[in-house]
Image (cartoon, rainbow, N blue to C red; front, top):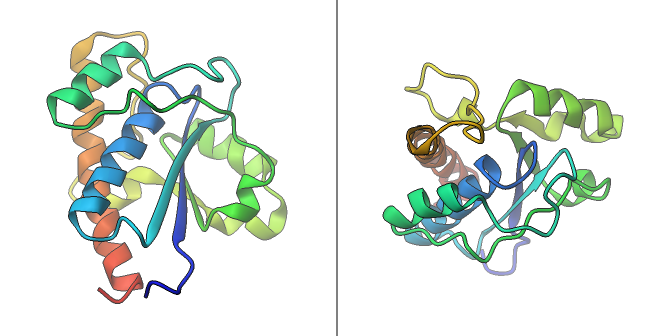
Length: 163
């Protein structure tokens, strides 16, 4: 397995300072715990350039750190055209950003785009809500959803990677 190229996943929200960096940190940590850290590469980006180069929202950092996940070293970036070729799976946090990705993706890469919460089988919600304009409780809810989706995604990755 070590000579195989890692599976690459890009997690996408609007500004890349709340939902997608939280998902990147959570998924990376859960993959490490599952022994898949070397088999899967995780990155995150935003569809908009509002916060390029900035760290995750302090509220996102605080909520993640309460669960033992440090995302303070991450920096926001915007989705680039090359990402569609580089990543095996591009998972949006909500339908609005998925629509932007589908519109921007070269047609041959459109099938790579999906919804992150599709991996949270027990979850009734289909989108990770943007907590930016709310309080800490919104960030807690986002983290709960991300943890559910991460668990389901890791199950699928284990099957895909033969683990």
